[in-house]
Structures are given as C-alpha cells and as structure tokens.
Image (cartoon, rainbow, N blue to C red; front, side, top):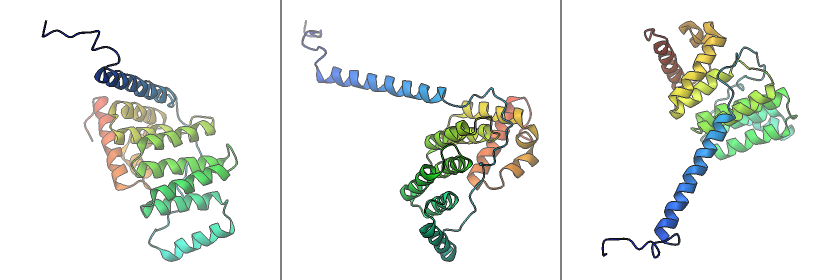
Length: 227
C-alpha cells in the first residue's frame, strides 16, 4: 500500500530514527543527572541551627576605588596565598564584570586554603554568592553544598540561601521547602519582618526582593496574609 511505511527500509539506521533515539537518550541522561543533583542536596527536614564563623561576606571594596584596588593587588603580590585577599579580589573582579577572572580567583583561594579549614569554607561560601550574583544559581548551590559538608554540622545559613537560589532559578516549590526549614530553625530571623531586615543587610536589592517574595509565599502557605 502506498500509504504504509516499510519498516524494513525505515529501520533503526534511518537518520531520523537515529536522531530521535539520540534525543531520547539525552533527555534520559539529563533527567538522571537532575535527580542525582537533587539527591545530593541538604535535606529540608533537618534542623539547621549551627553557627558557622566561615559564613561571612568579604570586606567590600568598590571596584572603582583605584587606591583600594591597588592596595589589594599589592597585598597579593607580597602574599599570593592570602585566602581572604583572594576572595576580596574575586568579588572586585566580578564587580568589574570580569566573571572568568573572578572565578579563577575564588578557585585559587579554595585550592591554596588548608583542606577542610574555616578559610576554605569561607572561600566556598563567598564563591557561592559570587556565582549567584553572576546568574549561575546551579553552580552557587554546588559551592554552598560543599561548604555545608565541610562544616560537618547543620549550619544555619543553608536553608535560607538554598531557598534564595532555587527561588531565583524558578524552582519555587523547592525554594519554599527550604524556606520553611529556615523558619522552623530560626523563626525570629526568617519568620518575622524585623528579622528579615537584620539578616539580609548585606544582600543586594534583587536578593532582598526575592526574600520578600519568599516570605510572602511562606505566609500564604500557612494561611496568613502577606503581612
């Protein structure tokens, strides 16, 4: 019949079928990779109340302040393995739009820091923020995941930062699950507006806006007005 397909001729070696087959395998591989990444995330059911003295922003340097930038460069020329200075340099480079060089600075800081030390956690934690602000939320989450593992406990910054990252990436359900964990652990910080303002002092305007949206979504999820 003219309308029928000759299966012998239109077999597995046909270019169209080979392309479909390849795309199916690619889709399955990406789906499996996503699941694997999800499985490696910190649990939303834990109680994250442990302090972490490595979770501190680097001292801010205005990328346009030539004198401050020059002083930082001089410090690094004398002490190239200075982890806090390398982290500062990474943020400065990011502020100048030099993302690739910024990444190199953070990665160097991580590499030269003592393995598992507070300084290495500090570098990972700040690198996560830099990546988030550079628009790479998946990579930011990975840096924070490593920092949390190196801490060894249940650092209190994990649920709010993971919530922020997933909210900005569009995974609102997962973001809300992390935010609920943040509120359970520290209700006065993340469940009250005054606490939010204190906790997010060093966040950017976009990050504060996302936090407000998370806060409103959390209140709505428990039957309260946006407030």
